[in-house]
Length: 471
Image (cartoon, rainbow, N blue to C red; front, side):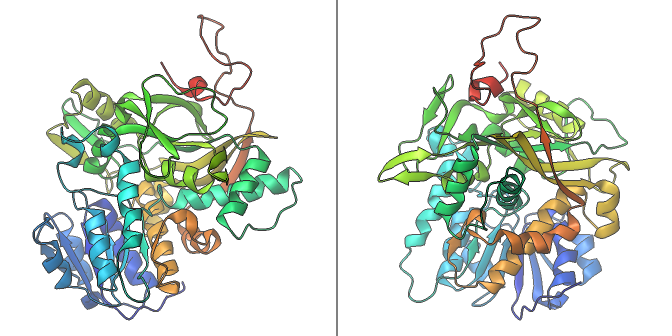
């Protein structure tokens, strides 16, 4: 197992399921000793594990008035901040790290507590699109000299899936006789996607892990952060909006600021379902849970002629969580987004045999639809790394890959996953991803439609968003 040299200190902010999962990987892959790692978190979850590894564990929640002092007490120039917290502003931490030459990574653009339910903010302002624009605006900070690398939103998704998209594009090109090398620029990747005919990209995921203890009424269970999932579900459903789309969906709106790559619906993700496909269950109904990659991938694959957008795919998450989380999400929706008082993270107690199948479904090309990604079982995850389930290991492996990239490129400034070397990231993460494969399917969202009940759908172009949306 290759070890990467790192001579600084590492501060982990937050120590839920992902923080606990990444600690053994940090010690496995980097030349760092436990005394150079500090965990600062809001509660005592995971303290026993931290003690097991000999890592300093501090309960001291980061808040707007104290985060600079807390961070400054543990990391400085040349060190690394790994932010896997909730309710701590990513933008605030990034700005501090940019001014103090600290490397940075997070798995999602987080705001301070209360952002998602602030009635003074518009739906647009509460979106992931807005959070990303806030982070990207920090590229203009007045900093002298090289800007330290800050990797935005780099877990499994967002993060790893951006690299899946690039590899999927190369695979489709090879399988359809389209001669191309590996694109070297953003524009070249966008041209490849356009020339292959990619209209829609789903981040298509199915989680079949389950607990031996069934979900109870009034309980939210999940295989990863409950706070994070509930918060995302309460945000507006968002999607990168493709140039092939003929009309805006019902109750859709455009943002009046930023890059313009995405739209949002005036309804929460927990109330928004779409038709999608993954290899194990085949066709499935899934939720459009807002995610950073929906915006960043569509932005990255945008082609412009002057100021006119001539190509962009529609991109969004299509997530079917574990069965217990499906019931939990349904109950959350029935209570208009009020989180259940009882919560249970199923990780150590997951039954054998479940998998997390996470990939990207690229549609509209010559062969129809192509899914490429990772199928990781709970059994293999347990064999590979302690304190990880299948869902968590896909995230933590991706974090390690992005940290390696940041250490090799320490002055890249603020970057999205799409702007990084996908091959390096894949090489580092692949040993932890189980079966990584691609598969073509003739599935479309209009198959079998209108046979039993009258339905309105676009038969001429199956890849229109209205065909995916579940009424």
